[in-house]
Amino acid sequence: MGKVALVEFNSYHDECLYSQIRFLTDSGHSVTLIISEQIHERASEYIHLAEEVVIFQRSSQKNLFKRIAFVFGLSRFLGKKKVETLIFNTASSRLEVILLSHLLKRKTKLFGILHNLKKANHSFSQKLINKAIKKFFVLNDFLLDSVKLEDSSLQLEAFYPIFFPEYDSTAPSKPEGEVWISIPGKLDFGRRDYFLVVEALRKALTKSNLKILILGSTNANDPKSQEFLDHIKILGLQDNFITFDAFLDNSTFHDYIKKSDYILIPLDSVGDNYAKYKIMGCYNQAFGYQKNLISPTGLEHIPDMRSHSLFYTGADGLSEVFESIRTGKSDKKEYVSKKWDFLEQKNRYITFLESN
Image 1 (tube, rainbow, N blue to C red):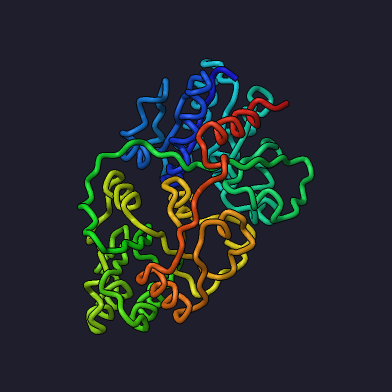
Image 2: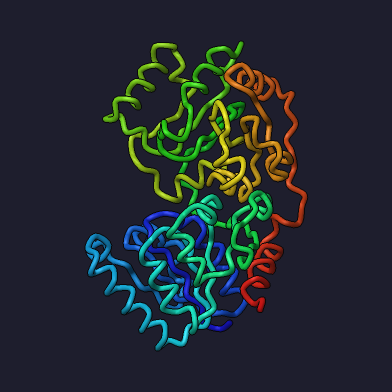
């Protein structure tokens, strides 16, 4: 396998890069990292692990002809470097992925990560990609057989990007007796139900030691966000929340996760997206730092969630979970499987890359 290129054209999904770079370099392979300028700006903790870094500049991302020119130039560059294996960190949707995979399909071993299995059967652009890439990673074992793929030529393997750089301790210490329950990410009312959390706290008999950490920008300029913040104050629950006005840098974000007692998924119901096709990023943050999740019912069929979650149904159920945590009646579910070990995940990843 020798020379490997790891590619991410998007400005997101960089949470999967560090684990892969470590797997590859620890196995003796040299890595060329091709990333968007947005990711490069926040990759300082691991950028040095790559032998070479190519940046997809913002100025090239917005113009169709520049995008196409970048891909053709990249194809020539990878050919000159004699890269043997190319891994698309997000192997879907983008024109760049379609073009580059077809340009290299007869010259290079191609792999990709599928972040949403629904696209494999229903997306035209994904079907174009599937003509060039036949081997894909998914990010949880349950996704290996959660959907029947219409294209029987595709092969899947799972790996867990649950390893992170060593970050400085930049978050404040957790006061003794407090319980920190984190919701990773900025306020996003399209993906999470924060009012459900407020209602559960309101119903809890006592909650003085419970702190809900929203680990991202509250964006108070957004009317919905301001409504939520005002709602907390009206109910006198502002002391139960820790919020932030701005984006959290990596070290602060990860330090808060590390110091948290639980990670909460605030959803009133779970649809097919998370029941069948994809995972949430907070799963791997929880698995990486070996935290228990507080999860909505509807995810119990996922073995990793069943083994490491406290489940709730609606605001009443979440309130009961808060009460059991506050009184110390909820037992932590320990991480004992070898699947959480670096060596296990590295071997799984590398074995698939080296398969015929």
